[in-house]
Length: 166
Image 1 (cartoon, helix red, strand yellow):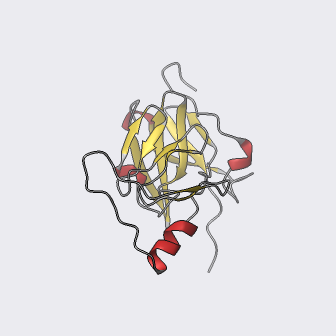
Image 2: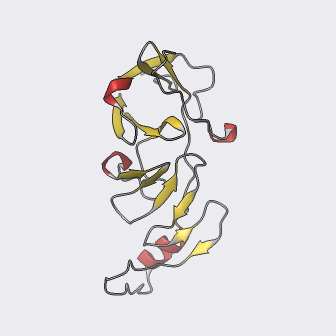
């Protein structure tokens, strides 16, 4: 790692993405293309990876909200917290946990329920009974799954699961 190269951010080991343990590292992006406080989507096949340069280091996870799969790369990054552009959910890239539940409510990763809520200055949401309300009540926020990251000679490398054959 060069003197100016940021390192990878630590992440909880139990949140490593399935299939990435022992995988070969792949070059994803020039470090200069990911300045501090920025995010980028890098795709390999049908896998879209979010690279985020946080104060804790560089993070690689799926580029999808752990709530309803919206692309986080078009959201905002504030420190280690990424905001989803779809339902105002905010998630901590350092821990994998929700910081602010999406406006649609649902279940936290541990199964606790959070009701539908309305951002300040907007008309209150009515959560009319029915299948949509039931689906919202049963939608569980998932924790992020992380891909191992390293920086070598100014390039960000990520260990991704092998591409399935066929």
